[in-house]
Length: 206
Image 1 (cartoon, rainbow, N blue to C red):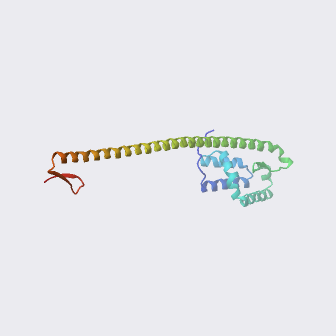
Image 2 (tube, rainbow, N blue to C red):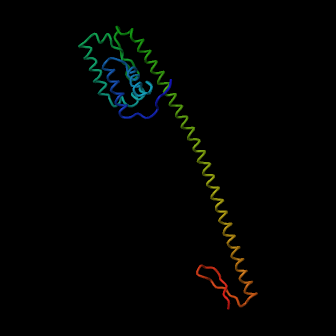
């Protein structure tokens, strides 16, 4: 079985799911058939539709469900033939009590329940695989983050070493410059140096 979509449900999709399920209740059909109808329209599996209905949407339409059942009963009273043609409803994964005359239909409903549970199991397996994939991805990101932190720490240490070497080099150059000035003063006493506006020493003849 292939899954066409695994994205989040929108408000319009929840509304469509509720409308179709309530219509099937009024018509004496099953929720499984409602889930299949919605699944075809939304490119989702019937198991995904059933899970969405039982876990979220059904709680928002309790009064609507009761009203749909009441309307179905009124239709049966007005037209007794509807009772003979009706299909047992499945509500909250349980089967409503049927009259002895409907016992022969019960096996069909049980098959539908088994099919529904099988599809739900497939849906949960896919969901668990997706969770495992996300968990593995999280581990990889954690390892990558640790590697980058270690690399950043090493770069900081290297930068500190370079800065220290640079300061040491500048000190050596400064000492060499001072020694050069002293040697020039000894060999040529008439020559002196003064600091220019840029901070550099320049030779001044006396």
